Image (cartoon, rainbow, N blue to C red):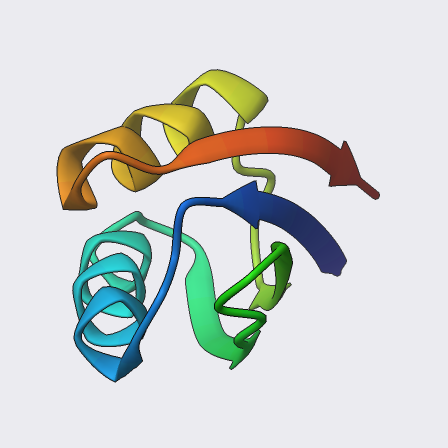
Length: 74
């Protein structure tokens, strides 16, 4: 399965590392690929082997730092 998150507030590779780490801890998340846009909305593509709830995705991104999930596309 594939899910795309659009996230505001990510400005550097440290942000990418923190968000990637939190998302990879979720059960069912197999890979995380981030396209960083330091001045806008970054895109995070997830490959999952199981359903991961929107709430769990939002919580993981929130745990990583002051980032805002603006859209989840399945």
